[in-house]
Amino acid sequence: MIELKKPSANFIARNTDLLISYMRLLKLNCGVLLGDSVRVFYDAPNDKSDPVEIANIPFEEDNTDGTKLLDVIKHDGFTQQRLVEYCENRLRLIDARRNADRIVEMICGDAGHDFIAETVRKAILEENSEEIADLVMDAMLFSAKRKDLPHAILHKKRLASRPLPPSMRLEDKITTESILGTQTKKLRA
Image (tube, rainbow, N blue to C red; front, side, top):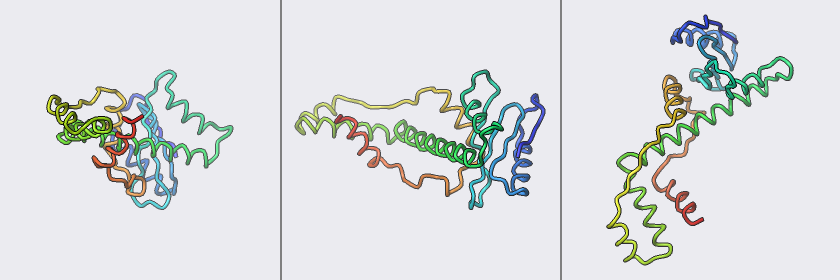
């Protein structure tokens, strides 16, 4: 399903709602809203929640996301399976970015100091005594700050409007302990 709007028209939620109602009425899993950008929506089979926006591609020269989408939907070589794979891959990317953001927020937040200190202390203790680890830790203060990356900011704005349905979310809880195990292994290498 492709919904066309004037290229100069700004995005409004009503346009999305209309596309989603068409998708439901026609029982389609994928919808594209063309206006000031290309917005792709996906409704996972057997999922009762609203379709999710999986891509918001601005009209720019040499846009890699646009090229990938065109490779999937071009007439010669198009298959439903390729379209579903594209949509599922985009959902995984969205979920990975959300999980990464959650971890960054935890590390940059109040728990970040303790997390970094625990990780460093454990790494020091692998090759040093408790006394040396205590002396080092007493002399250190740890903090973390988020980089100002455009992709982190852009994807947050894009994805904030519609949450992922439960069947598309990673169920793993991100905890200091689960991250700590991974970080300690990396420090050993």
